[in-house]
Length: 188
Image 1: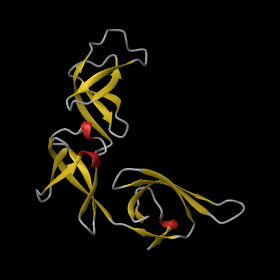
Image 2: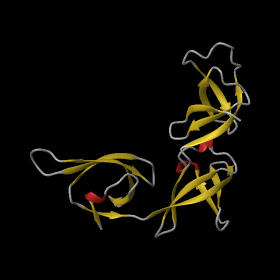
Image 3: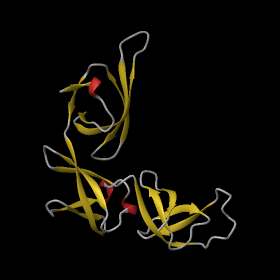
């Protein structure tokens, strides 16, 4: 058992008979009345988000979660196949459990979250950014680099990303997987 003083970003707790991860929290000590903790929680089973307030000092159940490195092998419809890089065991995940499935490239590594006590898969987190090659975009025009105008482009995984006008087919770009947006062009 832990209390609200043990809250930190990423901590997984059992709340309302479900598993929740703390996204952010804030301790509030008003001038009148007891202190409390405002939290933003993410449900690990269905991805739903919830704002909740805990009274300071309340006891909570902490759940032990493990991140394990897995390599993405291939997708078969809505089922994604991963292999543990340590013992070569394969794990099959549903598309809904992956935070950015459109940016998964064969051979890339990802962290899979496991409930340590039950050996149950909870989700899959890609790295914060990935480097992908542009396979199709309208050609850029020389001199169109001064404005913040964006154009759609298709990357090697089939995802569509808005990029600046100077990006051409064959360029490698860095994409933020949390937002799905273009970050920068990568020099080869």
